Length: 157
Image 1 (cartoon, rainbow, N blue to C red):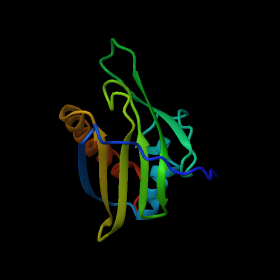
Image 2: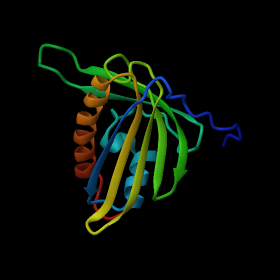
Image 3: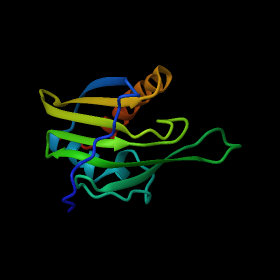
């Protein structure tokens, strides 16, 4: 565990942000584990995750997307570090991807979890985009990713 002070990314020149909310079937505990220990069960390519749920510790994982049968599967590396962890309530991390994603910018993803009648109310805020196009692309992607997570993470934690 590190004792170094947390350095938050400077988002001053990247003012674009988004917020997505979704009622999820899984419990806050199960979703917290999914975001901190189980990325390879719902999002990342199996075997690609290097991650410890500790503040200020770097992580890495890849996602893979198959295009048409004539092209190889595209691999997309993701890098970051945890900024804040509040078990069962909050995960905040930096999120860095390539040109088609965050364009190499260290953005900040904040996931807030609160009890909801069907399981959990998840509010995801992603801040630090250079432009509206990147923000809009990520907003669309996050809706899909959260739907995928809702299907993959078991109901009650």
